[in-house]
Amino acid sequence: DELVTGFHFFPATPKRTVSLFSPDSPENVFDYGEKNPKFTYFSKIKIPLLVIFGSNDETLDRPVKQVVEVFDRFQKSGNYKSIVIHEALHSYSGMEQKFTDEAIAWIKKI
Image 1 (cartoon, rainbow, N blue to C red):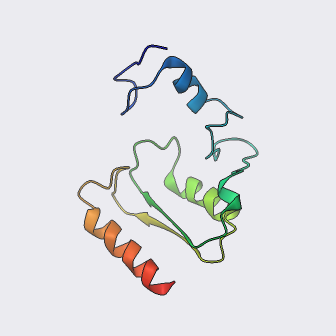
Image 2: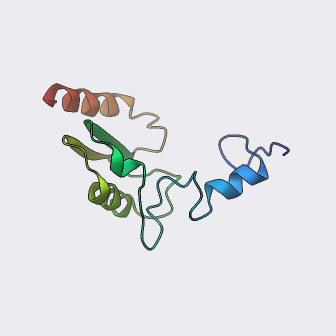
């Protein structure tokens, strides 16, 4: 139960780390890497939904295009959009204005 630092960008116990990365874990809500992803909770969202990814997201384990394709396939929102911000990291550091502009443009359309 001891917190471990330096493994992720946040401290976590070893049990939490295993849970985050184990298939069929309740915490694996974005299971896009599984052979047959379920997106159990994501696919229940019916309200307007915007997902934004950075093309250089350092937390992704595969090309962003493959991740976005899974999100697009499982979305059930009546008003959904996915956007990839070129050159952006997971934190969007240095790309905050582009992120904000994309989000506001989408909000204005809904």
